[in-house]
Image (cartoon, rainbow, N blue to C red; front, side, top):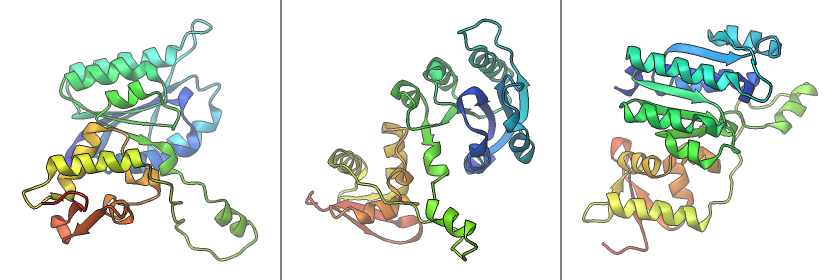
Length: 245
């Protein structure tokens, strides 16, 4: 089962924010058990990470910048990743960074049969995203809720969970989904939701319904007039209305 996968979580603290660490680790738990949790950086310059690291049990790995202009943190993370790969004690890796320097690492880990989950900001270069099995934007894990924050400051009672803001779904995205539906559909033109979701991510690692403000793929598909969604439970299906069965 997916929840039984052992994962190595490697965090580039020079390229990530301490405030996002808890949501990131909560997300990682959906994919497996993080048996190795290391964050790399020069901790003399990253003092604000202390409480965040302690809260989620991540081990800080000290890395000094030996040469100006060279990223020693990246090198340390890559070296340990290869050591872990050689030891063969995990089923997959989670690389938390928005740095394209980790593209070769992700490719190498996947060549060795390991699952690679990338987590970073929207600015992450496409090569690193494409090198991962799945890439999650940290922005969807930590939504901004200014209205709720203002209400809390004023002592007002508000809902504890913020509703994600819906975002426009481009024609390009709709056509991409339609293509995947066609490729995974049966003779009736119906594609089961779970295999469809897997195909979407295989073709586009950063595809995530949360990028558009929907917590589930089924909700995203129902919001697109072109698609018909039916069924229930594990047999939810989607159909492209433009394609006759």
